[in-house]
Image 1 (cartoon, one colour):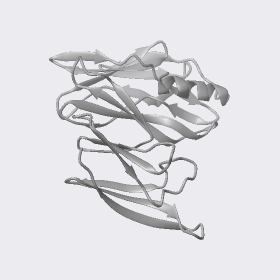
Image 2 (spheres, rainbow, N blue to C red; image 1 turned 90 degrees about the vertical axis):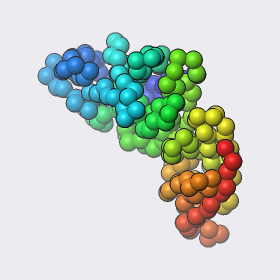
Image 3 (cartoon, rainbow, N blue to C red; image 1 turned 180 degrees about the vertical axis):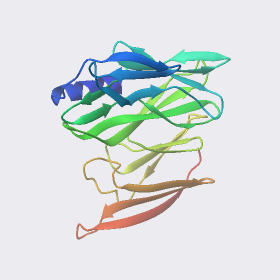
Image 4 (tube, one colour; image 1 turned 30 degrees about the horizontal axis):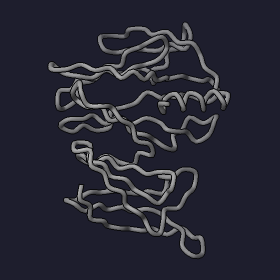
Amino acid sequence: MRISILLFSILLLCGCSRQDRKATSLQTNINAVKVDTTVLITECIQRDTITGMGTKIHYLYRNGKFQISWGDNSYQRTYDSLYTCNYNTSTGLWNFVPKLYSETKNNLIFTNVLWTSSGGNPAPLEYYAIVFPKNVKDSIFEKVFFINSIEAYLIYGDFENENIHLINIETKRNQMILLKPKPDLSRSPTLSILKTEIKGKTFYIKYESLDKNDKIESIERAFNFEI
């Protein structure tokens, strides 16, 4: 089951109200979503773009939802997942349309909201990453608990709250790093990760943990990696 379907189910269980929307063309490559006949929610406009490497990204409006299409003169692809961008007069904007985060020679990295602060609060707590290959043959894949993307490396966590994962999205090689002491777990697994860096083949991380007196302390670690 795709993450987007899971998110939609969670929102339904939380009782988040939905409003019907119509797509209105503002100009070439720009879609606007109307909540009613008078209110235009500009935050829901999904703007097409061309990346620094020449990849064209299009947001296709499909019956109240968006699909992502990307390509250049040599290929064109469309992801089959559908995403919502809704406005609720009580809680505000619920934007679950993925956004471009970074680009490598052969891939695009998009991020999207994994879960929000609460059932009635659209503020994001966790994100997930979607990797779109810049060709027609390689598979699209997703990683939950997104932390960062640095050059060709995608950095993400997991439910265990003590493992950091690195994947080289160009070679598909990956490596897991065990953090000791483990990060403090508050409302989400990655909230206590303060900073990540990669220099050469060394991964640097700064995070918050709890000492023996259950007081928050800042931890800095460096790990060599091979991928």
